[in-house]
Length: 303
Image (tube, rainbow, N blue to C red):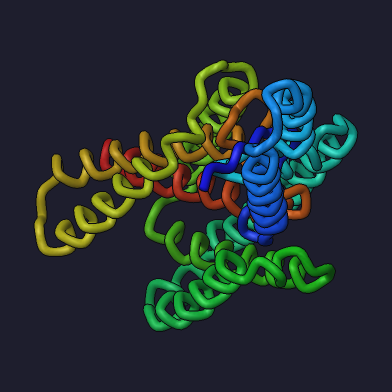
């Protein structure tokens, strides 16, 4: 049986919209075939008169079916529509920077207490359990913020978790800073601030899209973690310098990528949701903190 189908409007095959078209076309062809067999005994003039009418009927009974390979809308398009209003994007960026600024201020204040309070420095150096006790709570809060999207978007739970994470991070950095003198920590802070400002301005104005490097940077981060684990058993000055240098470069790239994810715009792989301001601030905050740690390690090795 031959059925002629034309396409005029999109048909969703997954919903079964095409079935009634196929049945209708089949019934139409059967009726046309029976009509031709009945009229076969008629005169030649009658067949000539029926042919235009038959052709007209075939045209009227022809339908259009459009097969789409990907009928579902893309996620990036829906998110870009949410950011189509420039005021929404501007409010998102301002909120992220305000949260990030508050995090850095709190972290800096905690580190300053550890550096300036000599009694606290001595106590931390004599009680290593303090650092090991903070680590489990730190990673638990980090995993919750990274994996639980509903909590990240629910106010005020997201702010409470982010504040707790910032305090724990500040305590860890304070415990690390007691192994360095105040001058080294100060130089590392200044260097981190300059690098962060420069990379942020670069990420805002460059046409290069660093968001597509997410997979590659994750692989490099995994390699860096393995390299750092091996350094626990290898006592080599230059290996430690190489490790600190690679970490500085890696988290510099991460900082550029996360800033572009936050800003979006002409970067096609930027797909953060407008309600993910806590997650965006958390990513940039971690990039800055890790950058600070690797720069501090470089300065300490240089001295």
